[in-house]
Amino acid sequence: MGGNLLHMRTLASSIAAARHKLAQAAGYTMGGARNLFAALGYKEQLEVADYYRRYKRNPIARRVVDALPKGTWKGLGELIEDEDPQKTTAFEDAWFALSDKHNIWAMMNRADRVAGLGRFSTLLIGAPGELDTELPQGGPDTLLYLAVHGDGDIDVKEKDFISEPTNERYGRPEYYTLKAKRTLGVQDKRIHWTRIIHIADSPLDNDLYGEPRLECVWNDLDNLEKLAGGGSEAFWLRAHQGYQFDLDPAIALDPAGEEKLKEEVDEFLQGMRRSLRTRGVKVTTLGSDTADFSSGVDAILKLISAGSTIPVRILVGSERGELASSQDRDNWNERINDRRSEFAEPFMIRPFIDRLIKYGYLPTPVEGYEVRWPVTDPSDGEKADLATKWAEVNNKAGETVVTPDEIRDRCLGLESLESIGFEEEEENVEVVLPEDEVEQELIAARRKLRDLARRRRVYGTALDKRRRWWKKKHGRQSVTAHR
View 1 (tube, rainbow, N blue to C red):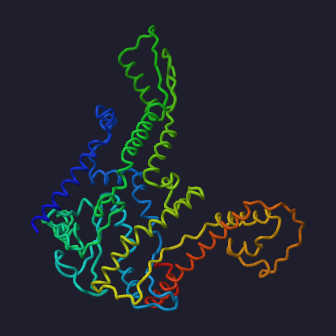
View 2: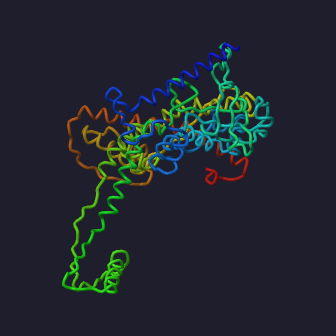
View 3: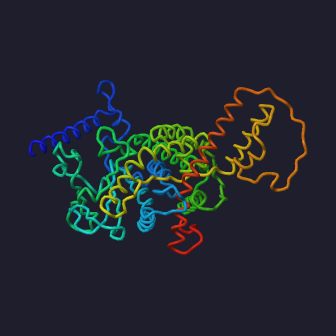
């Protein structure tokens, strides 16, 4: 046991030393003769407090940290056990009640964002008993609270790692230490691992520690602040043209006259006065060009976009990407869907739900459960664009490949022309030879609609179950207020 613990401590020390050495080597060029970080004013060793300070003061840094989590957890995800929308199982009922009581999806969003401000975050499961004891068996009503703590608030001491190689949790913490400043007391608190959900985003050589989202783009954020701050200061100094006041040497001013002239000049420059008595005074306007630093800012934003994998227009817009092109939105939505399936579900949702099931806070589902994510419906503009592309398929093919009613129904969500009593006169259609791209456009359009319909149908089961549960609990006909 002692040898294993020594091995764990040696391994942890070697990893820390390697990372420290790598951080020190970053920025050195010319065989170590030139330190770019020192020359350009970049900080070499970044701490969690640095990330928090920049997150609070820099809007681009805040977007880098928040954009992916907000996109991932946007809307009401659900857990489904039975596909029948008319049937709600005991597991689903308990889950709906628990998620409403503790705002679980919102807490997951918070934990995800906090994880990006350091190497990891934790979700503390509040239940009866001392924090340093194993999570007790309980029920849905005995889950007291959920709390999010970040890398700067909670730590793992070397002695608290499991060092027995035959243990399935080998190399992982048996206890966490919550620092005194977050316990409202004077002493640190030890917490048993069963009460903690450990969240690490994008880990590399160690499953416990991920990469802070601001680390990769830190130097570029420094550059952005230098450029935006320096450019703003230059604009402030140069936007108001300077003046040169030449007093005719033939005119003698007594001290009172000099003081009066000074007061008028100050009032003209600093106040709202727009007139100036200039007998014997020649006023010359000094030339000045205002600073334009927009091109430099755009270049830095592209670097930040590359480092954070967030498209530029979404980086400066919102998680829905209102300012982004359709291609950017499609790429962003694909990125969000991948993150949901590759990170949020396997490393956040399922470990949390499985822990609650194991200790009785949720009933055991008979046939397992499925995580259902919300679907973002296309905007009116996107629907119109898709309808236009379908209509162009007919024109290019020179024949009716898709009917107007299909376009109205599947692209625009409208009733058929016949159902509303509309009759259209026949027109001559100019026949154009079909092109190879016609088939490709039609296939792509149909695939997009089929995927949207499938996701809406799959998630629709979750919404139907949620609405029925809400009506049963509150006796209301709508869940609008809840959502």
